[in-house]
Image (cartoon, rainbow, N blue to C red):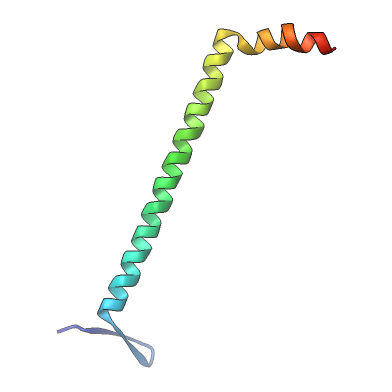
Length: 70
C-alpha cells in the first residue's frame, strides 16, 4: 500500500501531495476563469466601440464638440 513518496532523503505523506496538487489545480482554475472574464470584458468593450462608431457618435463629437475648442 502506498502511503508516502520518497523524495531525496525524506518521505512525503501522500495526503500532503494530494493537498498541494488540489491547491495548484484550484489556482490554475481561478487564473483561467479570470482570463476568460478579462477576455469577455475586452470583447464587449470593443463591440461597444464598434457600435458607437457605426452610429456616428465619434464623428459627431469631433464635428460638434472638438471643433468648438479649435
